[in-house]
Length: 166
Image (spheres, rainbow, N blue to C red):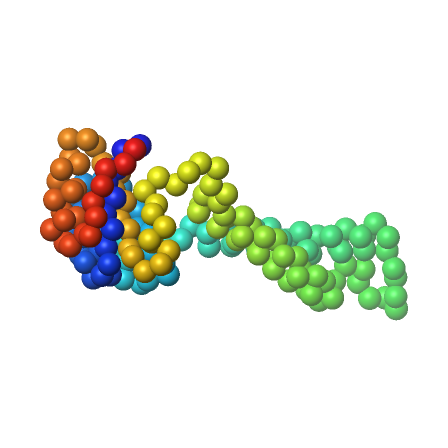
């Protein structure tokens, strides 16, 4: 994977470079920041996270399973008390809620790890230790024939260092 890495000291310069790169459609962009910044989220233009779909689906599966367990147990080992129904939904709501939170929460964590690519088993290309201490990095994966255009855009917006990496 060949790409161009630009190191920026100012956040505005990096944001403008990203907007220009996206406008010209020069390649796939990855941003490295010391802290999450909403400016980069707006510039990258990502939609809502897909993790919430996993939370919804597995939460609904969890509440279904949470109701099914005690209803099955009540039917399998009935406890007849004063003519009350054996399988009533009201007392099982607490268990249904708890299993929903458990399964939905676990699915959320695993989906976040999956979409973030954690754990990374390979070395992260395009990362520099400066990006953990105040600088901002813009990594652009592009075709070799468009690499010069990416370098020009990054330099035009004030990148302190621009280098090609594999």
